[in-house]
Length: 147
Image 1 (cartoon, rainbow, N blue to C red):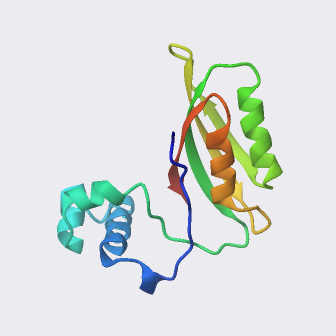
Image 2: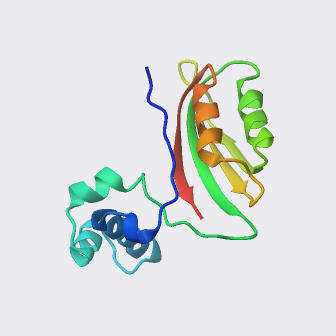
Image 3: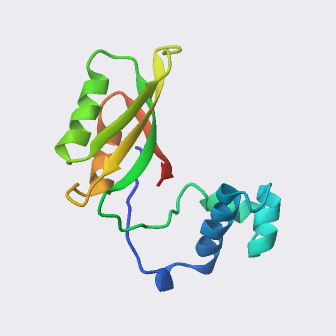
């Protein structure tokens, strides 16, 4: 049984310091102020293992009237209609699909990345991702980036 991901919005004061330092290390790397993960973690005062443990699980929240772009990565079976079913879930939650990139399926499994614009009117993102993960033929969904 696969455990579904849950998403929460919490105030900064409720977030453990190590997670805030992971966010800062990611910002240093993305901005080019450091050239390696080691430099970033040294600068913020955490271990590389802490960085790698949490780097894909925490993102800063930006309240943006024009929406936030989230890039999702999927592994899914190469089945007729499956992509259409996933796209319908996104539409049902009121998000806007910006880009779709799909690899040529290998051994019946395709890798797919989607950039989705999340608007103030979009439904609960964690429920949307859970619905996609629950779709028969979808192996996993991972948030790659949030802008």
